[in-house]
Length: 197
Length: 197
Image 1: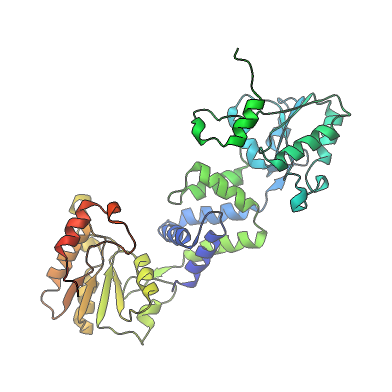
Image 2: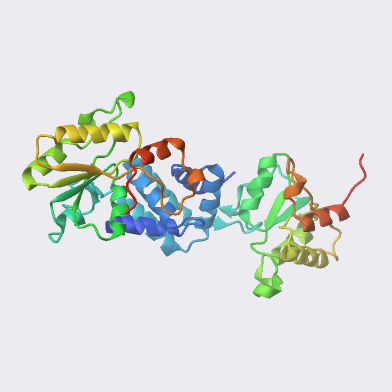
């Protein structure tokens, strides 16, 4: 029904998360109206993305030997934010005031799914803490059984070192009406309650 | 904050309709997890799409000299569905029982936006009607001022030929609750009312 090249483009667009047949058709037809330069840029961007590597220090994505954060001598090695995915780093960098480093686990421990501690990027975290005299590891993982398990595991493996292992509290996001918050979150937030200053 | 190639991919994804910065970031990071073959397919599909031409007869998209519908000798030349965009053809082909031809206008007459009859693909419609002894032209355009104007114009320019010019009625889509239908549609549908058979 479609010319082959249009069909192929629709199929490729359907590989994207949340894009079904109808959306892919809509997107493909919009690309048909792009000028050639725009299409070239898109195709080149896809080809270039294949050169993305992981930073050997923190496991962030990078197109250089080290990622730009690990390369930045102005940032201190005292603190490490431990995150699940490279994308999480961007969120913290958007805060703008954090000047420490990161560590990307690339997954969470999940015995149910057969993901064990050795399957995620944990060993190099121990080495970093050891070698750089890190003072604080702030674990920022999705509040979930897997996140909690991973957090506890990190606390355990770092217990032999003189490093604080901290976490971000479970709570209610800014501007969110309480009625949209599930009871589990409220229960956890209640446990983490603080005195009004 | 992102490696250049990731930034470029995000920017290209943002060229797509309905994709903002946040969605583009999400899509780009999912592409980072594609295997190389999948990325190659995507990039190749984009490059191939630049070869898409228009059918010289009906103005449908095609990667051949003529589109597959105009090439199909099993289809009759008696009826022509006039549509706005190549994508509209797919919708009618999905019905499965239409065996006539199509004609893609690539736009609607809109004096307000400075789109005049000569700016859309109308002249070749007259030639097709003349040369192929077409019996019926079914105009299926978006119900709107532009659609109505274009429809009236087509009726006028074909009035010298022995051809029926018909349209699809304005009405309520299958399974749609009346409360979601605007009053203009209801008014038009009321005017088009038919006896219950």
